[in-house]
Image 1 (cartoon, rainbow, N blue to C red):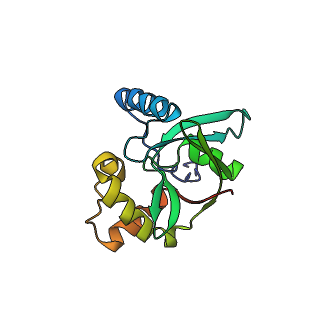
Image 2 (cartoon, rainbow, N blue to C red; image 1 turned 45 degrees about the vertical axis):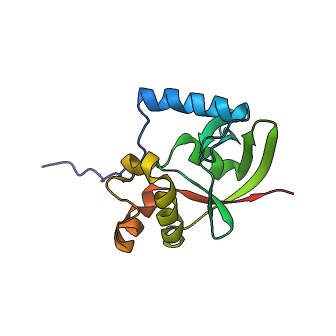
Length: 157
């Protein structure tokens, strides 16, 4: 008689950065914190859902059709989980700090944002999209949408 084991659901997609990518992110974050933005990068701070401390990470804020978004190329990372809990954070380039609120998009709304994001940032993030590029079909990009959280951000006045 064999035991029946409930099948666990797979973990959400997350691709950890290589040592080199982590080091590079530290440099990019430091540059943004000191007023140097590379191709529009900023340092994002979001309150940790467990620690309560502000966590910092460099991001590529993406503007599409007049609206600003944050896309997690690497998947369901710690900053994504923190953003879901906090509902917003801060973007910093030098002394300029913009406080924002964030609303996560449902998967069925991500296609145009993801395609535009891949068109702009694909040279940097394609390796995290498992073969999906800006030239992929709508169906392929839509199929990858659950793996890449997208937040619409609104900067507070």
